[in-house]
Amino acid sequence: MQKQYDDHAATSSPGAAPQPRRNLSWVVVPGLVFAALAALFAFALQTGDPSKLPSALIGKPVPAKEFPPLGKLVDAGQRVPGFKGSDLGNGKVSIVNFWASWCIPCAAEHPLLLQLKAQTGVDLYGVNHKDHPVAARRFLGRYGNPFKAVGIDATGRGAIEWGVYGMPETFVVNGKGEIAYKHVGPISPESLATQLIPAIKKAQAD
Image (cartoon, rainbow, N blue to C red; front, side):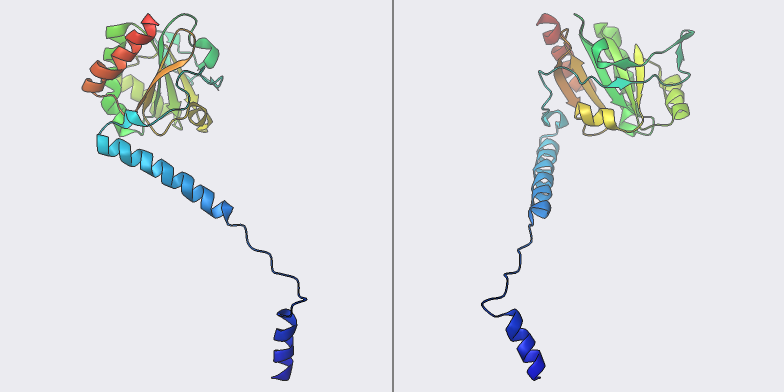
């Protein structure tokens, strides 16, 4: 007992070095970031309009990321190319759509992409996200290919650079190569008529 008491006295004596406090910022900061993102998603769900989720890229040039072509994809007998950020703009308004064959909402919105192309005549660029090439080609073969170019985002890095929340997402890029509008989630007939097409017309007028 005496030895235990002496040991305790030695570690709690005034001359003992103070124990360092643990830095809990690595726990607190990620928690705060997650809470903020959760609040944004909750707001979008409550309003019924996921496009209200913010984007820090609005008004800024598109990322310079290059998307390699989807292998063996052919349209009208011609290989469909991939694309990079510098291919967008050049005086023309364009659309960039992130999609995947495993994404059920992507299949639901796909006819509206074909309608969008027919109504507006703008060039559509597709980004196939974390998908199997065979499944992606089968998807376009089944539902149609509205895209001028189809690039692959095999690792998901491109989606991160574009600030994508999830599949599908659609961007309006103005003639200067800047992101003018972002639509989060699948396009609906209502959002096509009241949001996307007006955003295209505004970008064309600007």
